[in-house]
Amino acid sequence: MSSETLIIQAGLSERPRKSRWPAKLDILQSVSGLLLALFMWGHMFFVATILLGYDTMWEVSRFFEGYYIFGKSHPWIVSIVVACVAVIFIVHAAMAVRKFPSNYRQLKVFRAHAKSMRHGDTTLWIWQVYTGFAMFFMASAHLYQMMVWPQNIGPFGSGDRMWSDGLWPFYLVMLLAVELHGGIGLYRLAVKWCWPNVSRTFLKNLKWAITAFFLILGFATLAAYMKVGYEHRLHYGEPYTPIWAEPHHAAVEGVTK
Amino acid sequence: MSDEQKNTAPGGQPRQRMLNFHILRYNPQDPESKPHMQSYQLEETEGMTLFLALSEIREHQDPTLQYDFVCRAGICGSCSMLINGRPGLACRTLTHEMDADITLAPLPVFELIGDLSVNTGKWMHGMSERLETWVHTKEEEINLSKAEARMDPELAEQIYELDRCVECGSCVAACGTAQMRKDFVGAVGMNKLARFRLDPRDVRTDADFYELVGDDNGVFGCMSLLACHDICPKELPLQSQIAFLRRKMATIGN
Image (tube, rainbow over all chains, first blue to last red; front, side, top):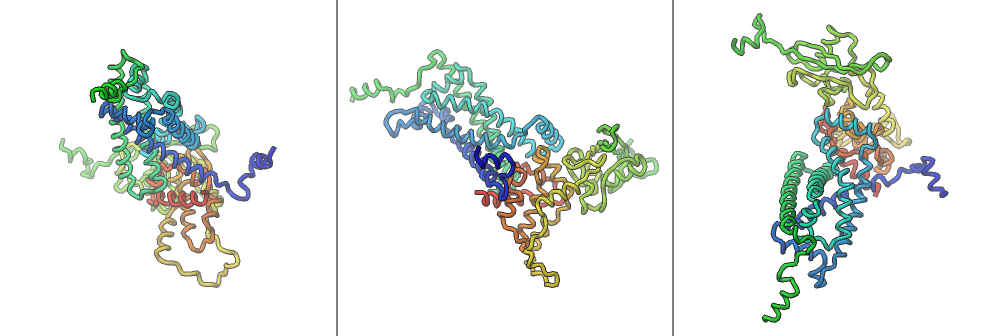
């Protein structure tokens, strides 16, 4: 057994100098949360392109597969991006779980405290815990699915997932959890580090405005995919390809020319 | 009957509200005692504070009721308690600003002496020893006959601003983290360190302060719920002080 292990076991690891790890972990929690929140904003805009039409969404999904760089789709590029997001997600979850109530007594005490305090920021934290807990499972499942089957991202693939695969309730709950958690988290970051140094009332109003915006955009996007999936239900599994991108179309065009 | 007649007693005096106090009673010294709510009725008087109401109840209705007070003017912090579920000073809470039903309970986290009386002093003493909340000077520099170095009035003002803390314990009782983790230093502790960090007479560096609060029972345990800031009876700038300390400690640790 290493001497380091024995020193930690004897509870003497903080002698004579306090560990620098709590500081590093605190920063890591904030930075990983910030990155995930910013990613989720971008993610929402990308998936919402379905509202601009099938072709736009198809082009965006192909863009992330390197279609416009390599001239052909490489879904593994998406898998790599998803894997990176998953690593940040796991790091953030590991950091954040340190703050969770660690037993039932703590949860009970905190809930009673929040109920009697009637204090907005305290209540919001409970919601952050609940939504964070939900995402341990939901985001993990979603990330795994996107990492393993990135080729299914597209107007029909995503629509089929919502409707024919029956996953729309899953996405509905995850949408609520993500937007609430991310919005509260960003607000918390701003007040925690006091940057930007503006009033909390302004920050909170901004937070709710952003959350409302992304929820409305999210609901509209989800509804759009459900509609796509419903209309495509008889052709489940067939990917979408714009007419102009179909090989025979290009060939016909070539002949015509 | 007109509104004026309704609000007036037969003698022509304005009719006062009847206040209903619901007080959490418990005596930890008595094995037979169980935590329970006890109600008292009291006629409101002009300018009545919760402290005055409690004094009335103890004087005329129940001499066994325990609660703390010293200054009666929001200076000593002794009469802090949960007022309708939120920490506050009884002597600074006017009953006319409240509904007629008032619930009072002792502050959580602190050792309960009985009813509304808690031992904040014991907790504060422990915190003070742990965080060494006194000016640390170089030993060789101690010279009692030497005039103290002058301090910039602006800096003195900043130190005084943080020194206004009366250690009432409201911030600790309002803190979600302190409810779950009993060793958390609370806003009062962090505010104290922010105060000594400002003091030019204190020779401690940020690395020294890190040794005191650079962990999850210190500044990194704070989840920024900021109820401390919102309920502080002295309206101390706790949010900015904790954030400042966090930034400094994070810099030391990275």
